[in-house]
Image 1: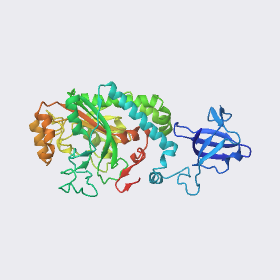
Image 2: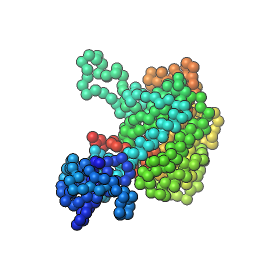
Image 3: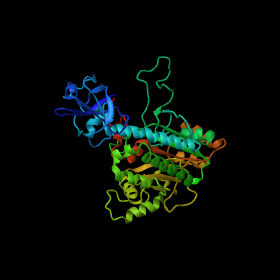
Image 4: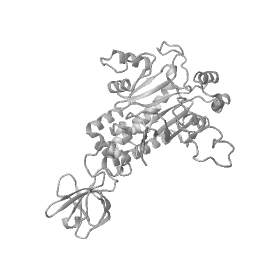
Amino acid sequence: IAGHIISLRLQKHTAFLHLSDGSTPSPLQVVLPPSACEGLNAGCSVRLRGRLVRSRGKGQSVEFAVPEGGVELEGACDPLTYPLQNKQIRPETLRENAHLRPRLGQFAAVLRLRHHLARETHAWFEENGFWNVSTPVLTSSDCEGAGEVFSVQPDTPHSLLRTPSFFGRPAYLTVSAQLHLESLCSGLSRVYTLSPAFRAEPSLTHRHLAEFGMLEAEVGWPAGLGGVMDGLEGLLTRVLGRVVRGEAGEEVRLLRGEEGVKQLQKHAEGGWKRITYTQAVALLQEAEVEFVFPPTLGLGLQSEHEKWLASNLGPVFVTHYPKGLKPFYMRASSGEQGVESEGGTVECFDLLVPGIGELAGGSLREERLSLLSAAMDAHGLPRAEYEWYLDLRRYGRVPTGGYGLGWERLVSWITGTENVRDCIPFPRWAGSIVL
């Protein structure tokens, strides 16, 4: 067998080491002669020859017995300079050593859980008639219209190009695949993608990254906003149930503990509440809590508001926000939903979950050409950049609805990891890009 030494304990007649190759949540205990441990310490990589036997001690059912001469040192590790030598390591130190962080048991568990989540997610979409599609990382428009984009330019202009712009027009890293998914959805009816997204947000909170995964889905001919929410809840309850009760259950217990597992099992039962934005504001105003930002009708919900709602209601869909708080592409509500403000509401929702706040957001898309054009003008969007998007309404329009879910926030919720920088292999945020 082979792997990295996690810990080494020497006694007079016997030595014990914990070995891990990252394939399982728990390391394997190895028993060997003390004389075979010369030059070994935590962090070394070794090859061991021996046999698997029943363990005489507590804490494991089997152990690996190595005889004299059964140890081959593959890679030495200087204990004086190895940055992961101590058991209690600051999260900041781990992020600075992102190339070594996967060797730690807890972070390896997070990486394995990401794999299980992706597998169960793809399985749900496959079973429900969705097509997995590829969408561009380079785009010519800002989907959200918020301006928080990374511009793309080559370091050196090409001599054959007669324009300073490589593409002949501005190019950006994508903030969302949604607009492209709508195009694909008009021909395939049900599409989804799990792709990287980029946002130039200067935020330094534990919920934001400059590069992150986005799970986005689009459904043609949806059964109203409720149908879109039904699909998202069905996906997440299925994923929660399979991950907690399946082979990844040991990973979740390692990261969250038994009580955390019970909470996820309860959420996996479904029946998540649905309230309007107006009802959410009323609940917040009635709460006996002194918020930093007083909840006010017509203003957006802050992180503290979202977390309070989710902690008291469990996973909850908040629907029908005022039009002025949401992007241009969301469908205007046909009737008022309780918000007494000029411009009305839109057919949208945010999904809030305990400990995280907003996990996903979705809406019906505005399929009426005249209303979509007016919304684009109201947001000051350049018409030339979005003519293709208007064409989807001009030529045999297909009503669609969908959602986007932050992948690292999902990992954070299920693993109980507070900071999304610890939910992705190589995190990037404002002021930091390692590797």
